[in-house]
Image: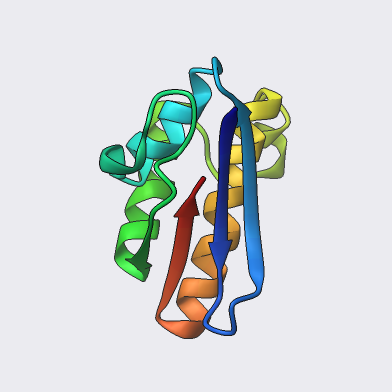
Amino acid sequence: MGHDISGYNKAGEEIAYARFSSGNYNATVLYDLLDAHNYYAGVSGSGGGSTFSIQQIEHALNSFNRLYNNDASSHSNSDFLSGDQKQILDFIKNCLATAQKEGNVKVFFG
């Protein structure tokens, strides 16, 4: 079991992916940043998904930056992030790029 969280564009192509083992508390960080608590099912995601707007993903990125005192525009600061933190940041940034291009992004919580 584990958390496999994927982002998709409108064509159904996976544009972002994050994987956490079932006991990894960092999975809850991503759920929190996306305000997606209802998709958290303990040892894995619920199997559901939702569509997120540009504003929701921007909010997640801003919250991430506040949480980790990180400036996402600075590559030097991201060098100090842990592997899971980088995975979360990359996931959010990839989702944001798609949302900015297409108006929203679909995220599946498995």
